[in-house]
Amino acid sequence: MVRPAVDLARIVLAVCALLLLVGGSLYIVHPFVPALMWGTTIVVTTWPLMLRIQRHLGGRRWLAVTVMLLLEIVVICVPAYGAVSTLADHAADIMAFVKALPDYALPSPPHWFASLPLTGSLTREWQSLSDAGPGGMLAKLQPYAAVAARWMMVQVGLVGAFAVQLILLIIVCGLLYAKGEAAVRLVTGLALRVSPENGAHIVHLTGQSIRAIALGVVVTAVVQASLGAAGIWIAGIPFAGVLSALLLLMCLVQLGPLLPMLGCVAYLFIHDARLPAILLFVWTIGVSVLDNILRPILIRRAIALPMVLILTGVIGGLLALGPVGLFIGPVILAVTYHLLLAWIEAPRSLAAENPDTQAPPPQPVDSAQHPVADG
Image (cartoon, rainbow, N blue to C red; front, side, top):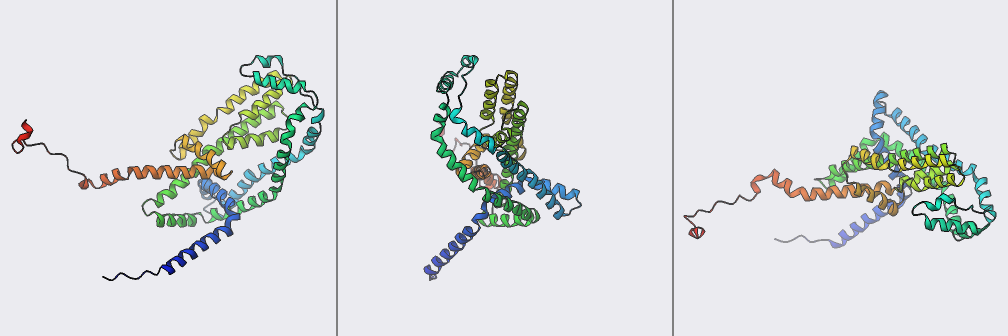
């Protein structure tokens, strides 16, 4: 038989053209990628809620989409505006504090503080800053002033881009809510082309993983930050709005609310408010251990994943991809984990489906035919 000739040049040119099309398309849509990722995460997580609202509204999808977008504006945009407005309202106080650093003298640590365990080095450092007198705090903070100033300038420059991303986020969520079924069919069809056996399962698993991480990580972080912020507000800590935003950020990145709230406890002790400090300390311990109880319950309601896998995905995704990595990291690890389990179980499943292909059981040895066995 004569083998057909292979047009290598045509194949190479077709592959190059395909790569150029894919690369050009990704380059054109890359400004929308963050909004698309966040929008997909929000829509996948809240899709059951949208369907429930749609049923209560007589099956009118457009009205349910409008309600969901209004809820997202209230839940996402209003807190962001609250954090920015809090910083703006206290801008004069912050500048006054910075200008007063050269004349600020840190008070000496209380006598009881040195008797606490594991506070020896902290007490000595605190006392050295107090002995330095006015300007001692400024001398310690001066090496970090330039870095902090550059960071603040970068964040201010990103405010406009952040506002644009919020607008794009709302638009993407509206489109996905309106055409969610068509988007699922498209993604499922693409997954089936890549993997005919496991494509639909991978898409379903991805949706479950996104919903599990959103419920377990984000809801737990919001609950912890809300309870911690409530304690800070009731205790009368200054800059409570800024501290609340810091609590939410630290809870989202899985660092917990312990350090900021312990700082508030120390502030109350320094100002001789011992009873509020003790109550806030007890509240801090309770809020800090809440995630160990609430997060596993919420995550296992959606999908069965090892907690080590979730924490690794959240922290690693955050370090590698930024805030959106909170969801992308655990989802990638979850899909990889379940594909690995499916690959390990594939031979057993095949053997169970085709019992005739299994090796026959060993036959007993006939001593009449095999005299050696008698020996």
